[in-house]
Amino acid sequence: MPAVRICVVGGGSPYMTSMFASLARFAKSGLLRNSEIVIFDINRENARLMAEWGKQAASREKIPLKFVVREQLDKALDGADFVLSTFRTGGLDGRYLDETIPEKFGELGIETVGVGGIFMALRCIPEVAHLARRIRKNCPKAWLINYTNPTSMVTAVSLREGHERSLGLCDGVYGVKWLICKLLKIPTARAGEVEAFVSGVNHCTWALKIFHEGRDLYEEGLLEKLIEKADLSASAGYQSEAGAALDEVQVDAIRLYRYYGILPGSVYYTRYYYALRKTLDHHLAPGFQHRSDWLKELGAKKRQEIREQLKNKRASISAHDVEDSAHGDQAIGVLNDVANDTRRLEVVNVRNQGAVPNLPEDAVVEVTCALGSNGALPIAAGPLPFALQGIVRSAHESATLAVEAGLTGDRKLVLQAAMAHPAHRDLDTIEKIIAELFEAHKQWLPQFFKKGGKK
Image (cartoon, rainbow, N blue to C red; front, top):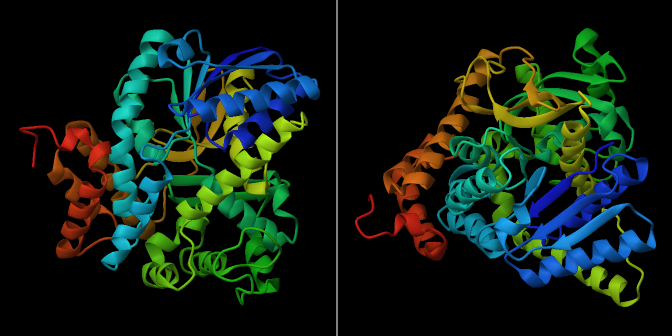
């Protein structure tokens, strides 16, 4: 099995715990054995920390992987077979602003959906475009696996920059898989047993087909029977992926199934389309912890654990938890699929090519694909129901406008992108939110503040 050179852009991220754990598992099995992991991050301290952890653990646990740090992007990319992109322009402080500024005006903010997601994209787009150009110069045959949010927009940018070997990943599909596990009363760690054929755009997908151990759960009323036996009281609270009980978000997904006949693919994000008022109430409630704050705490905890392991010379590569493991298994799994031509199925963001007949051919869609040495071949699972086509199309149009805005620095397109999204409809409110977000993120949005730029 081939040894490959993998450049991780943003390799100082604490999410590397999941990536390294999955790499270690593949390397131990003989797949990706003796591969080299090149860490690049603008935060050099974090990059060195993760590389040292990988080195010590690989030596202790006899894992056939090599970890190195490169402080210049071109040198990091040189000779790469794969580039894994996982960075966050503006950091978690930027995400916090995306989440909280819209809430001041009674709107929801999140890093991938609506106006918050648009500003996350606007910050990342110039960096993604630059990365795609450097890949074309230094390693044009490398596969770029985008794990940077918002993944549909990020993937669209790298494709527009001419790097056709670009794949976008998001683990949102685990939402419907975890829900099915709970209905089947099996641990969510066994989500790999569930095969979901989804269709749509990132964080606005629908599971057109769902299988478990070869059984089609939509056929013969099998899913309906599971739902009849389930406790739909949402006893797990607002949101809780762990445990056996269903939470409020998962119960709402079941409510949507009863109206539309299929489950949402990205269960976690369905609330930002179909439960806006209730979700906003949760976000504004005393004691609510925004995802940015939670991730900041988690990252600090992970790094502290890594430092203690290194100090005690007990470094051990492992995922932090089930969610962490899912991140790594998806990204490294796709990398392995391409490197070893497995033909395995996975949900990927790719050019449409007719897989979603309700969207343009060149749209970046999130669909189930067959993976191999030629990349990801989208599988057409059928057309979306008529009642769902509009909301998916709106999400696509919003993303397309945001990409154009990020590349051109045209502020008018930012408002158009926000107003195209189903989460926003009030012009007065969106104008105020956009103005404050521009000011808050000014240092990360130079394309919008150039002299003579479009207003």
